[in-house]
Length: 329
Image (cartoon, rainbow, N blue to C red; front, side, top):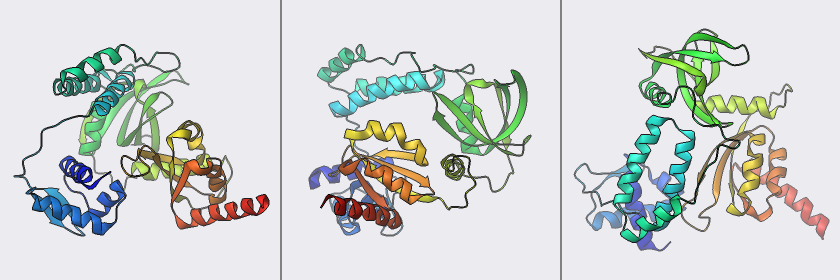
């Protein structure tokens, strides 16, 4: 990416965030902090009202005039794919909201690109085969849960338990929502069981917001996932090993292998790298208790994987590489 394109991308990034630190910008673009400071200064000299300072964070002034929204053809086509996934995996409320946003995006596209979307739309489908479609509570499931998460509310749910074929009422304090196994799941502290529980959203028959709760020290969703990863990675054995946060990048070429095997190693989240030499690669975060086992898995990707952190994982990985090299020479 040349500097002009990078400065434009930086302006768009600033418009999309209320506050962003220089370190976050550096990570996003794969730059050094000095380069970030120079780019910020260049935008300010060009008349863009950026407030903030190094070490604190940057934001656009309330009086800054935002640029009109425009999309490249590839971006518009990617949003069309996203719309198909939204239709499959979200409830009617979010589907209608997303459809409204997509219509606005289509309206802003040149005529030729509108025609491209129309032609492609008929050639993309997510069939029901192997993928469950919306749940019982559709169209009112995820939105009230999202509101409860934002407001710190206690909610009362009428929940159908499949294995006992019974329905009961629970008061829960949500800490997050997950999508796995073809369904959305609500993760919440259950006042009845006095522990964190996983509720499949399509089995919630009724939901009521009871207002803000006064529960203290609830876990974050990341903390919950760490514990679950530890339980899964121990394979039923007792273990006192500490989980280590590990960040690894994977190339698009072997994304299928990463996607198929990632959950065996405490996978938590991922993002797509959008700029730099590794554009299109996936950066994934794991919480795992055995760096030797994790590094052996990463070795199976050969040059289609790149380690980011921690140094202890990199050291173990390099030890394996040295042994392999000695065997080949």
